[in-house]
Amino acid sequence: ALGSATVTVTAAGPTLTGSVTAIPSAGPAPLVSTASFTLGGTAAGDWNAVLSCDGTSVGSVAGSASSFTFSFIPCTFSTTVPHTMSVSVTRQGVTALGSATVTVTAAGTFTITPTTGSLNCGTTPVGTPVSCNFQAVNGTGSPVTISDVTPSNPTEFTPAFATPLIVASGATVLLPINFNATTPGTLTSVITFTVPTGTIQRNIEGTATAVS
Image (tube, rainbow, N blue to C red; front, side):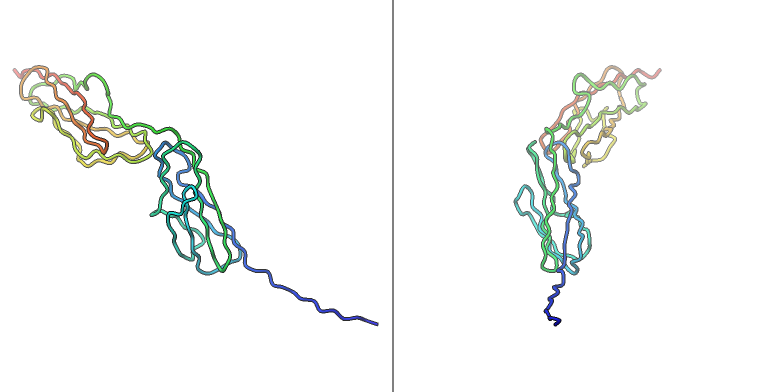
């Protein structure tokens, strides 16, 4: 005799996967990094995502796109230990967790060169301006703003760039100064650059010859 049996088929539930990318994933302290995540799986519809920096929740966002960047909620890391950015995403009742490791190196410095002696603008006749350049070198992990530039001798030395000037992380920017002598001789000035940490002072000089 043939027997009978009841077979129960259970439909598979939705699946959800997530991957996280740290932008940037490495750099000098303090490093400001943002998280970008990409979703996969069969779950559909709106989702809610929570960003954590080293295990501490710092913000959440809702949406429906398959990828998103937390551009407005960054993580800032100041120490050189390994750090973690993680994103927990819930969609259609399913939660996925993705994480990325961030490597922070020792803090770099912001400097204006030359750091010793004087920037020499050379020799020019009185009334004939020349331009010579300091250099701003930003080795830190964040932009640095030069908010003001003040020469102690504004008659002969004047900045040829506008402030505020933002120097991006890792960038080297020329800071031109115009030398326009009104009298012959060797002329000097102290240029004071105002930055978020205080002021940086650099020396500059030029020689002017008399016009016959």
